[in-house]
Image: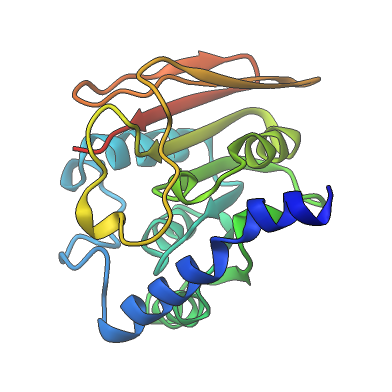
Length: 222
């Protein structure tokens, strides 16, 4: 990739990192403030997280990858289900909180402080991959998804939540560069091992099956 292309692909990352460092430092818990944050009972969660927990429980235990892990609530729940969890997060403040919160719950998570744009996922095979609210901060989504497919075990579970352009991105999420899915259609990424398809949906929950995994995809700005 040329220097110009790199500048375009990565130029927004420092602003996003700084914003989330500030937010995570200003709040003891920026996300998941409710008491159910670490529960592995699907009943106490919304439809997306309930479906992920149920699918992960059926699949596991195994190895899980949480991309854009935030403060680690999703990663901790997967660890409680018996998964070995790798968490990738751009904010160094958030990474410290993931480790601290994981210790408080008696689980261990491998934390990597890296932007998704250039993360190297080789070396492990993942049974569950979670991308919850992170892909709309990534300009080159195809590269990330190709990497995910390349390291996905047969029959892996993928859970994706991303903003689309069908409705406005909430103001609190639009204060930094954001790259929502561009239309209310669908996009896909293909590799030799299969095709990852995602149809953005704003008012209706949906799922799509793909050859190498089960993909639960919700794209919403509402």
